[in-house]
Amino acid sequence: MNILGISAGWHDASATILSRRGELLFAGHSERYSGIKNDPNISRGLVEDMYGFDIDHIAYYERPWVKQLRRWYSGEGIEWNKLRTRQILEQQLREFCDEPSTSMKISSHSHHLSHAAAGFQTSPFDRATVVIIDAIGEWDTISIWGAEYQDGQARYRRLWGQRYPHSIGLFYSAMTQRVGLKPNEEEYILMGMAAYGKRSMGSWLQQKTVQDEWDITFQDNMHAGLDPSLLRHVGDVDIAASTQYVTETLVLNVMKRARDAGWSCNLVYGGGVALNCSINQYVGDYFDKIWIMPNPGDSGSSLGAAALAYGRRVEWTDPYLGYCIPGDYPVNAAVDLLLTTGICGVASGRAEFGPRALGNRSLLADPRGRHVRDQVNEIKQRQKFRPFAPVILEEFAEQYFDMPRGWSTSPYMQTVARCREPGLFPAVCHYDGTSRVQTVPKDCRSGIRELLEKWLLVTDCPMLLNTSLNIRGEPMVNDLSDAIRFQERYGIQVVS
Image 1: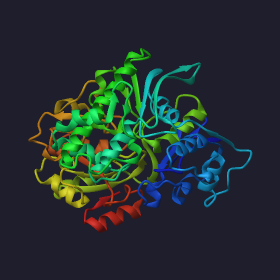
Image 2: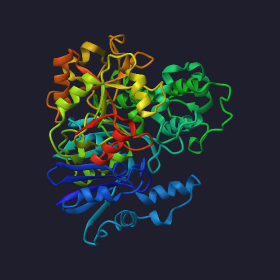
Image 3: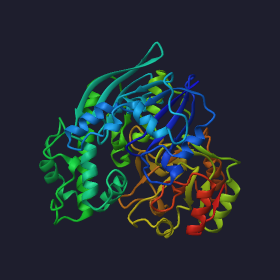
Image 4: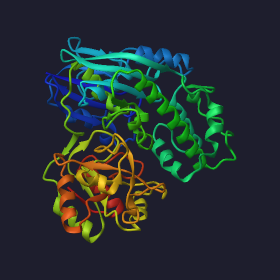
């Protein structure tokens, strides 16, 4: 029998199946199957991919009645059909399969603890300080935990926390909306914009919105967004730069508090704010070792809920846990296309669990051409200021990038590093000289490792540009039909 972890009902639904031996058997995003970006509900294709697994325990990633109490407090109103976990599961699953039987065990776990478990129980650490920063859980917006194993069981001690409405994540989302981007979806674009602006409004914005940096209290409830007239005479890129500066200051204050708690020099970091790789480059100033699982946001909490139900260390190998496109990785075909056209798509093997393409659902390109970045941005119909990531053989990373403290490797694109030769690799260097690096170890189970090795052999270049394989406005490619649609839409060959 197995445990099914579910994160659904609000945004970016996902499901994880964990065996009673701690093996991750499957983890996937609902949006990849439905084609609806950030789909809040469990989709038919996701359920169909889970057929055949015997389930006797369903673990849900938060406590519904506590969340509804907070929604009442915040003026959003109570959704009476989402007061109990069983209610939500019946709504999510009844269309596709039998409703959970009364004999099946169902458990619900706090939102931030699910984040913490997704990180700690997949980490290599026996003891760690866990920091969770997001927009909002039930009430929590920041929490610090001391985590350790006792007789093989994962134990968590809450060391400190911050509650709604004071939220770093809500602040960042409100500023994302302020510059005309979609909150809870396009925060990563704001992060990219920040490199082009000046932090000239940072001090003013900090004084305006923050009363006490140490306690992270805000003058305004950012959940309601900001007055559109705020900073109306300031350019969007300067707002982005100032927002990034304020957020960086606040996050690093939290990291200092977590370090000073004295629990462990190992850091596990989770929650949606942990996806801000520009800030992550400084986290190593506070901790010796860092672990951020590749899906630290809410969709990763289906894994966290399952981990809490299991109670022990999860056997973590890699994030290739989703839908499988069978067959050998198309190394030769991809290299041939890269040599002749400079660009190719790859859709092969199991889909990545997390928001970033890591080789199995990737659009790849030669990083050395000066016009490659614009060409790929045109294909993906993105803003031209947005950066692309390099994927590089791990053993070459420090030769080409000045990796920040605590980040000798970055297998899941979780930090930025300064490129040592930006003139040689203009396609993967951002305006500020940094790159969001993905390092590929020798034991990587994805064929991206073999592809890079062959690319190095024929070009003497150990890296490629890597971005997600997706049609604009849609989630990443999941299956072969999605890959064919991408190929037909953009005229870029996708090999499988």
